[in-house]
Image: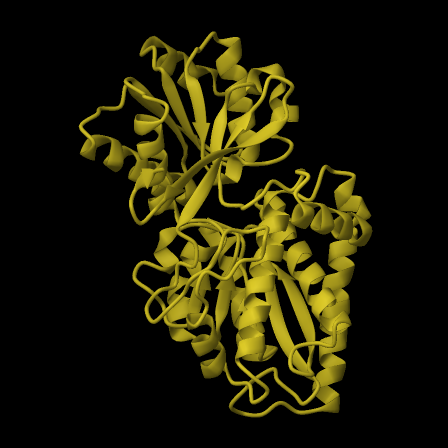
Length: 403
């Protein structure tokens, strides 16, 4: 955490020096002959920090690698990072500071659904290109906002539909129960799960809600157990999802547990313990960060070298990979936008991305009025030895079915 915060301060100071040395053009705020100033917004503190620090760490690593390789079309990437403290009002204030006072060329983030939801009116009033790679609420892309792009996770409406189809078609669920987080993340995703299950001619056996900061779910799980479900869908963040899984086992619940993307943490099996074996979740990555895949091993080594403090916490994890993959995709668009850089050209370059692959995150495709770059996910299963295995199945949001 301290290393990331130092990076943020360094970015602020360095950006200020660049601004003094070389004034930006009026039609391209944050761009000089030598540099492009980017705002990185995310939750570095508070309950969403696992995602905000991942967004910043991934961006930092990708931007530093780009600068070492000569920059983007001859310009170095400079960035200023602001912490929204997991607070929607502070997220709005931070975004406005980045775009109106710091006059950044583009914003990378934020990293939490609750903050993103609150920012929708601000996004609509801004012309600043905004690139999202971690959070998943659909309200920022449905309907599309011209300057806002997302890749990495499927949005929660799409995730919910895909989870419901996977549970019915692959897990053969007949009595399906659901427990959801009460905030924006849980509401959007779980509503979609419920709607899709009903559309497929099924009825939920039980449905319960919990708050992000809860640690005891025995009351909800006891009521769910009375319905004797064969599948339990958990739509929540990593820590509560892990505790729910452990407590479900302690209560003797025999249902297969299916989680959403944000529960795809490397630490999930460790936190849960032996009760994690057999649980599944969707994950919007091409490969697991701990796998032997060459791209994963290269990223893992670079991340551990750059962020040893985070590595000692069991990272890189989901948010770090999504942040890095998103930053690589964003940088590709910056490169395609050309030397004569404007915000309009960046938007056009983003729209030109077609099945762009990073090797870590799932491929990205944008286009006119297409602001959801990834509409598919993989499925992970926890093995008896508590290792994670990527299953061959792919769920696709556009079809709402798993293949």
